[in-house]
Image (cartoon, rainbow, N blue to C red):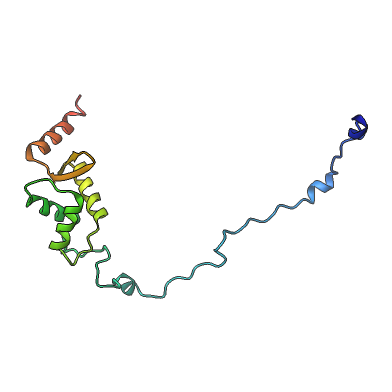
Length: 149
């Protein structure tokens, strides 16, 4: 076994000048980005115009916000509604707006977080309604008392 290992041999140490001639590889570029991207030649007004008849999410100052639309819809309802029901109602009431269930659901959840709406859970289903005046007053009072404690 020692004959194979040859313990009498000295370890190979590179010479000092060999260390200085070592090169470091150049940095690699990310794949798919060989050339810088060109900027669009369209003017700003052309880029802002929607390309189809549907509203692409931008709204003018005259259009109500999603929170206002959801609040209006829920104020006319006697019982809590699911987000899909609210989205369907808004689609019927405002066909010019591109209503998406995810946007309506996010708006409803923001309303709950701000104390404007109430969430009612029944099993796996979630329903929303306008917050009653007493519950929103309680939430405001609790929020004011919390720092004083």
